[in-house]
Length: 245
Image 1: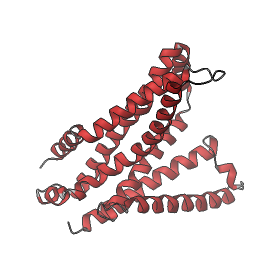
Image 2: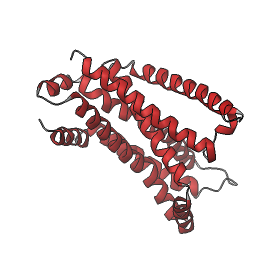
Image 3: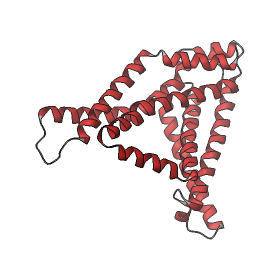
């Protein structure tokens, strides 16, 4: 089976996942309605029962959205182990290394779409409904934003997904992968802090002078995320290649 066909299979499988689509549609509608109500609500008057109900639903919706944005990619990464599809794919001649990158790519794509639908789209609708000036100011902000910060955000996002994918592979898709992910994340942050202190001492700086998103701190973060992606990706691929599926 060709790599492109595996990727199309991943796309088809996730596009036709009715449960996830329904959850996303419900959260999107609640986020839009709740955002519109709160943005037009006057906090100097006593809220009505309808206002209180919508605000409460919006609060639960925001919490549910945050949980869903983490659980959704985790579920996607675990799906092929859980459904015994992984062993069938490998038996059909698909390279385990190629499969790793296809799975990461598909997970990233659908996670990005979920963020756009559940966070970005409701926010834009609320801003447009209230005042176009906010949209123009937001556009100007993204145009003028430093390229280093964009790189940090992109590589940070990729490093999180690499750690997530590796965690799922290590435990063969079991639910305990959540705790493995947390363990890997804590280990990465501690190692990064250690190297941050070492490099700061070598440069004659204090460790907090290498923190932050600008200057030397931004450069250190870029290298930290890049090295995390490479190391965790290699661990995931090596484990996957040796697993008995």
